[in-house]
Length: 390
Image 1: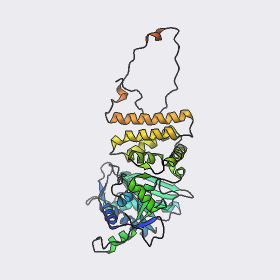
Image 2: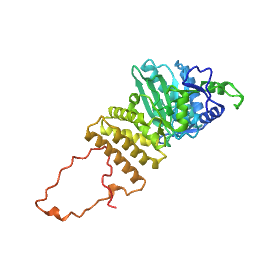
Image 3: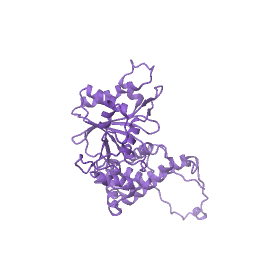
């Protein structure tokens, strides 16, 4: 376990032990491919190299980097190796000042131009512009600029779903969803060691590395991660309520720490989700994107995930009209059916037509127990709506 550091002076921080520092070194020095679109070559980078390059160029451009942190599932993997969450996205946080639009633009240009350093030898760099690099290697660009949140995100593309995400944060209101994803590891001492020490690290000679839990209590969050427990605070503050992540934790055999409290929290999660995604098409896009980003190599878990999500929505949604709730449940069911069809667990129902022999009394002119169903929801793409006869 990470040991409580006497120099941290707060419940949210802890000093990493040698095993954790060694695992952190492995994460930072592992080669990660950044796949280019079209004819652009694959970049082979390490987190250590991209951090050092970007930080150096930001300082040269006049933007001071206060510290750099490893965040999310990668930080959780460093602290507890087999924690059930895996180590997918590689999230890095640069603490910087972003007082105006000019700084946002400068940060983006610095990151894009830094990618030139990682092009293979022999590739001419003279005519490659930042716009070209953005189209070739950037999976996602996000900018948030409000009174309480000022940050930007640049995600470098990896076709296996292991994107390298560079987040530049001035201020952010909420930095975690659940206690198990609340960890950040401050990298500055290790980066300093890489720059100035010629001695290899060992159990008896390595830099002091500090981890922090944004949950507020490092030891409690660490215990939750070790024992696969679900805990959070004020889910109504999270965009989307944490509903999709909560269902993801459940499908990975995490269990609520407080079974009585979780029912109340589930209602808050559902309410916030439908506030942020009130339209059925927005819900569809969000669900499809989440499945693509978090289950890229876990096809068989998609169906179980959707069934868990459907159960939570069905049992804990109190803020919707009846037809709106049924509409969302129907969407989740159709996505689950599509997942099964893609896995050939059932035939693809879009190509199946069912014929039924009408009962004899239907021909009776006095039989009139018919009703006209409401028209189907116009989803943006077709889904199988007929089940196979068998």
